[in-house]
Amino acid sequence: MKEFDYVIIGGGCAGLSLAYELEIHEKLKEKTLAIVEPRTDYIRDKTWSFWRVIPHNFEDCIIKSWKNFTINSPNQIKYIDCKDTPYQTIDSGLFYKKIVDRINQNKNIKFIKNLNEIDASNSIKFNSVYKLEDKKDNLWQHFCGIEIETDQDFFDDEIFNLMDFACDQRNRVHFFYTLPFSKRKALVETTWISELNNDKLNDYDQQIDDYLSKHLNIRNCKVNYKELGAIPLFRIKKIKKQREIYIGSAGDMTRLSTGYTFLNIQEHSKYIRQNIEKIEDTQLFEIKKKYEFLDKIFLKVLKNNSSQMGEIFYKLFNNSPRSVINFLSNKSNLKEDLEIISKMPKWIFLKELF
Ligand SMILES: Cc1cc2nc3c(=O)[nH]c(=O)nc-3n(C[C@H](O)[C@H](O)[C@H](O)COP(=O)(O)OP(=O)(O)OC[C@H]3O[C@@H](n4cnc5c(N)ncnc54)[C@H](O)[C@@H]3O)c2cc1C
Image 1 (cartoon, protein in one colour):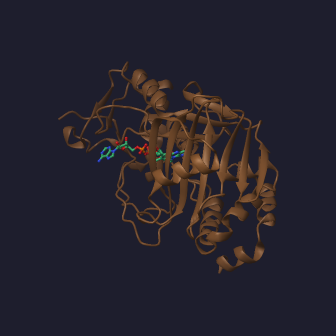
Image 2 (cartoon, helix red, strand yellow):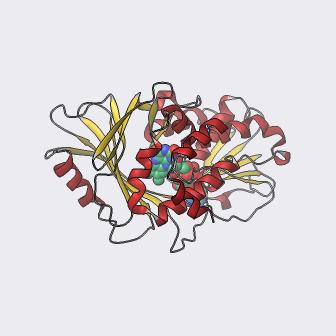
Image 3 (cartoon, helix red, strand yellow):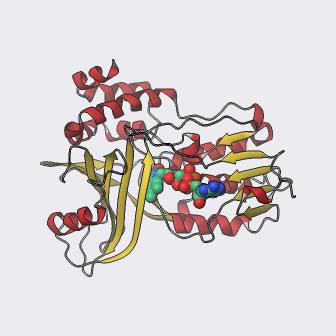
């Protein structure tokens, strides 16, 4: 059976980002790479968004970028400027095509469907696949979004809505998220932070229909695309194996308080590429411990005070936008951390600390 120097298990966001990073930096000229991926077609299946706090390889896969956004609590609306770190949205279809086209040109890289097809016993493995054992009290960010197209100009495409809490909360945390790609086209997403697989929360289509017709006043529109997602907001214990490094969500690249993962994956890929020659002796790449600590407290607050979370998120944005964006993107300094902590309702947070 054929042997490879490197094996990437899972050719999704993290696996392909890493392969691309290695390829464009010419780390695969003398080395071989197998990407284990069961899917037969790469089609748009996710919409990745983030504040652009660091450069990345996928500027040409951006559908739209915004310099302003809003956040709505039931009775208030806040306008926030993010011109220094625009919010960008990537079309996963363009991302997959760009990477697959590039790596197909290198004969040292092979896609395979199953790990059993090769001898990986001596390979260094980068694994983005893991098995989840969900427990009753685990928190998830789960959502359903549709890209709609209206027959008349409707949206202000200069500004997106990060969170609109003016919707049915059902004793959980629920908000809508709207990304207007043009005056007639937008992704509208219903998002929950709660347990998963609760039938009382999963009527996503109805939630979106109600929001469109009763809240946004859109009665006629075409649906171009739909996405469903569930991001675990907890860490998964994995078995440590020799010569195997976890990447992507499996590699703990998700920020627990927000679900943001895409840019962390890009930083991780860069780190692996910079250290690839001595990767076995290199320290694991991690999201800074302070965020793990603060996010765990935040999620405890969220779980036990769901009815107040709309207000708490709204208050978070009373800080300078730059500080909040840096904080949410794991780029904040101590001054910014303290600024954010000082604006949070102290008693609620202190209670969850102990
Ligand atoms: C719908 C959706 C929207 C998201 N939006 C955002 C966002 O806006 N911003 C953000 O920062 N994060 C977002 N995330 C979170 C995160 O960025 C994505 O989940 C991202 O795709 C994680 O990358 P990954 O490589 O870990 O997992 P994936 O991209 O899911 O890749 C895993 C790959 O492994 C393959 N696979 C599965 N089983 C096996 C197996 N047994 N052997 C080999 N391969 C296998 C799968 O086919 C898949 O291609 C979103 C997540 C979802 C689900």
